[in-house]
View 1: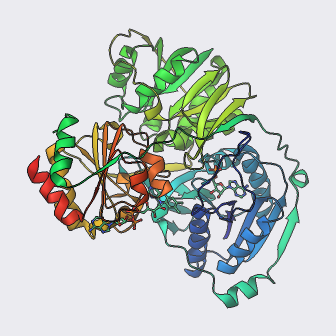
View 2: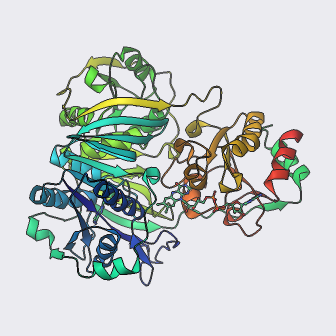
Length: 248
Length: 310
Ligand SMILES: Cc1cc2nc3c(=O)[nH]c(=O)nc-3n(C[C@H](O)[C@H](O)[C@H](O)COP(=O)(O)OP(=O)(O)OC[C@H]3O[C@@H](n4cnc5c(N)ncnc54)[C@H](O)[C@@H]3O)c2cc1C
Ligand SMILES: Nc1ncnc2c1ncn2[C@@H]1O[C@H](COP(=O)(O)O)[C@@H](O)[C@H]1O
């Protein structure tokens, strides 16, 4: 079985995003960028499945600017076998990303596509579900545990009330949640080795996918700022404050 | 415009998350409520009473009983000929189903809207709520998920909508439901709808300590219990307690953060609370930058003392 892992280059999760003064977007100039954290979890899970002898090859894919190569090299250093960069400087919306991934899946015929549940940049939480619909395949979103058993996969999902398990026929699309695993760091020798692993570069046009956006962002604003309030001296003072709120 | 709202339910009653969606949909146009489920007649009746709902579609079929996206999304897509917009709550269930509907319709979903700004124009948070984008759709139909804390809840009484049967392709044969582990919270209010939330972080050490320190205070205040990701990852509490960018979004009257540093991902989930109270031993913890009332103290002394005094 082959596993396809889409990885997105996003603002590093430790950076506090700043809105541009002209309201045109978030300032990404000179900001540290990294692999979307949920995608690291997806890469890690793919590697564990391969290590368990249940997959032979892991292909990482990224759609984005030339710099997204770095993200793919990270995936390769962690343990992916080869990578595909679909290069474009345009912002590609989840629907178009899903269409490109579908075209790649048609060529590669993976048994599993493992995506993150959400990009921490656009916070869309839709690409995996869209890909599953376009491929006509089942989806296990927000995965907490994945178990492959022959031609099906059981996915324990993190849902609002707790956990839910669904059984999906393979090929299947799975999106990762935080508790699925703890991603490994790439070792230095593996980072060196990753430089030699194959990385193909394509364009959206190669797949015949129209990436023209459907949504126009007309304005990006700072959220209302919350002012820090006061610090109280001791518990007694806090008790007074809480009583004044009328909740106790 | 005609809108179709996905009613979230457990085959017995309507989940509260639906009510905010009805309000959002009402700002776009006429509201039809879709109840897809198994033996869900009581849900359809309840949905028909929600103020603002003008029609209920009931798709009663074993295939829809467990809300599998593979089965529900084609049903919705098939019904969309008569509607301009489909709206679902931004709950785990809505987030699972709505994008699949959007792809069937070949439209982009607008996730987690905060407001309706006009014809096909909405605001939504991006970058963990550190920016609010105004987006306009050029698609022929809209697929939207609604942030529950951003809209008033529609009244559960006052409507008298007619109920019509609807049907779809049924079981897609791609997936099956196996089991659900849902903790019974007892008398404790639900996180998403609680007036008061007491939340604990990494500083609570382990599950027993979390329970010993946080639960008595929550009991005194009739509060729901929340947690930071660190507390969930460490296994102090179940995953569905996580408040934040990638967990639950809450906006109670009072949010009490105990031993939580205030990382941007946590703030994203609670900074719209009316009053934020923080207890942390580090006076420079970022949580104090958003807290209305802060107490710099060791929680192991402060929280039991507070609980006793209330
Ligand atoms: C992709 C991604 C998604 C994420 N999503 C979320 C999310 O949805 N929600 C979320 O919460 N986090 C999320 N995080 C994690 C987030 O970045 C932080 O790591 C997390 O919120 C920290 O939890 P914490 O505040 O409990 O722990 P810490 O940051 O370790 O803070 C512990 C705090 O306890 C205080 N403390 C310690 N001992 C005591 C004591 N005895 N008395 C009083 N105070 C004490 C310390 O001063 C410190 O401020 C996400 C991270 C990533 C990468
Ligand atoms: N440009 C992209 N390149 C590769 N993968 C992507 C891209 N955009 C989204 N994804 C995948 O889809 C997941 C969900 O993203 P989103 O729907 O944008 O929140 C991410 O975690 C990635 O796995």
